[in-house]
Length: 70
Image 1 (tube, one colour):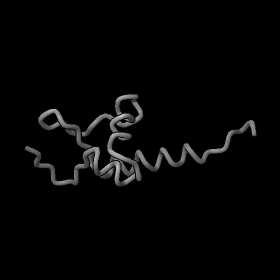
Image 2 (cartoon, rainbow, N blue to C red):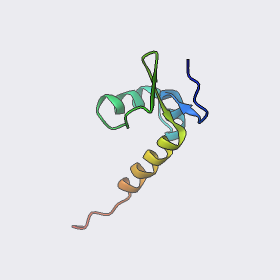
Image 3 (cartoon, rainbow, N blue to C red):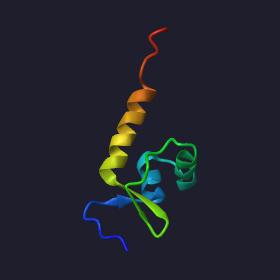
């Protein structure tokens, strides 16, 4: 049973945060695009909310980065 004091997010919460379906987040993990879970409880992965927010910020900054060859 989880007892962390900091909020932990499942696929569902991550999906809501980035505006996609939970299956998309699962696919991100399967393809190595999602960070390693902070906690695994009874086989289910969870991430601290701050971990997800930092990951999201990096994803957005990479997406908007300009190609120096343009």
